[in-house]
Amino acid sequence: MLELGTIKTTIRETMDILTIPTHPFEGQKPGTSGLRKKVEIFKQPHYLENFVQSVFDTLPGHEGQTLVLGGDGRFYNREAIHIILRMAAANGFGRVLVGRGGLLSTPAASAIIRKYQAFGGLVLSASHNPGGPDGDFGIKYNIGNGGPAPERITEAIHARSREITEYKTLKFEEIPLDVCGTYNLMGTTVEVIDSVTDYAELMESLFDFEAIRTLLKSGFRMRFDAMHAITGPYATEIIERRLGAPTGTVMNGTPKPDFGGGHPDPNLTYARDLVKVMYGDDAPDFGAASDGDGDRNMILGRRFFVTPSDSLAVIAANAEHVPGYRGRVTGVARSMPTSAAADRVAAALGFESFETPTGWKFFGNLLDAGRITFCGEESFGSGSDHVREKDGLWAVLYWLNILAARGESVEDILRHHWQRFGRDYYTRHDYEEVDATVAKALYSDLKARLPALLGQRFGVRTVTLADDFAYTDPIDGSVSDGQGLRILFDDGARAVLRLSGTGTVGATLRVYVERYEADPARHDMNPQVALAELIDVVDALSQLKQRTGRTQPSVIT
Ligand code: G16
Image (cartoon, rainbow, N blue to C red; front, side):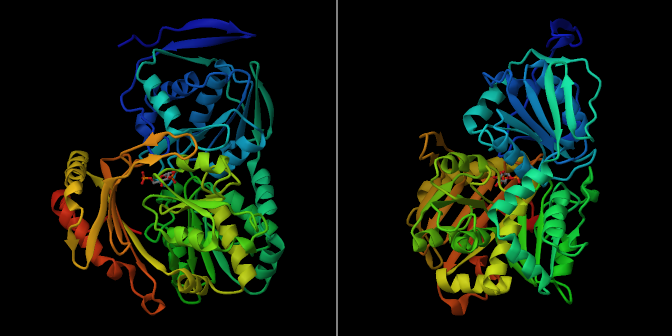
């Protein structure tokens, strides 16, 4: 290990660039969406710096270019922003666009990278994971198309982090992050920008704001839960100021470093405040929530939950109501564990559909090539080619646009959708913070059993395919294997088991099951009942409950 603390100095213009010796840290491997760890790990001397330098070292040609920088405002965001600003200047970036207060939602960061044709961006977030001193922190690099870096880049960053011996920074007072303006950081221009206006204008260019305004004036009531996270200022500007919803429509709208002590994950378990309103007496017509960094969304009607898989299908099926998408849908993509509902829409309406591994980065090539217009995941993410991230508020506005155009309730829209395309019953069971060794053994044991499952019968179903999902990108031919164990049955039902790539404690096992039901007379079942048999098959094959010692999943979505 190198001795830390010996500082070499060189001169760049009028200031000292400090070259700080360091040593590699274990485990700086980006997961499904960047590097996510406990705050205390990130706060170790040199930890964040090593990762950032590893990113810069793998980006040839970044000198003189523009970097976008911002985060979801969680604990340690501000310190991290200053560390990165100094390093970006010392590494020769020409300009850094930083969100005011160091804040940028993930979709806004993507929009800013694209609008200002930046070289790339660093987004500080651990998404929906809890924040605060004992919570999680995270960082990821987005490329010039505005999307998460593809695997070949994240692998190069990881490789670099394993051999790093020094990083560059400089001595500089902190620049004032809370005031928009342009500052000279010893030769690098730092622009503190307000991304809310840019983002709101992008949304106005896609949706029929006039129709939504009329809807909101007509007695239609809605609530949006920002979960004390980054979307608050964006939602307040768009939903309350520009669309005229009453003050208070946006709940928990002030971002807090610890998300008010909550878990900023928009699902029925964690978005408690919203769920209480939407399932209470006198519930509004429409409810929605977004997560820590603003890229996830949950859609609710009055006492009615829309699964993310169904939401994507409804979005794809209703493009003719939405000005930004009318007449120009080329295709739709979903992650492998997401239900096949969107595929059915694509087949019926005559556009392409794709099945990619979990992770938004896998949509980037298809979007860039114009092969898809919409994409989404079961993990409460949906988006389009307007940016290269999933976009929580975008989905909410898309739904409002559909509601305004169709004049039906959320529930009626879903019921009519199922009548037309059939219903894909779907659920996901998560087992969080499982002992990592137990989880890995369980996973590899099931994987080893897969070949023997072919042709086996489970109740009314026979296995037609059992494999570890591998994906060949149709655009660049790159292959990503080991993406999740799947068991397909002859009636179109399916069970999937994956290890999450976003948790920070132990391992999270995810079980996803679905089955198709064409008959509208059978569209009223409780999904947990409709899918109980399939859940039992996964449990019997993997011995999940016995091996993990869990009787219940931590979260059911
Ligand atoms: C991230 C990724 C998504 C992925 C989700 C869950 O979302 O961007 O593509 O579906 O994690 O991944 P996993 O199942 O591996 O935990 P986010 O909102 O956390 O950035």
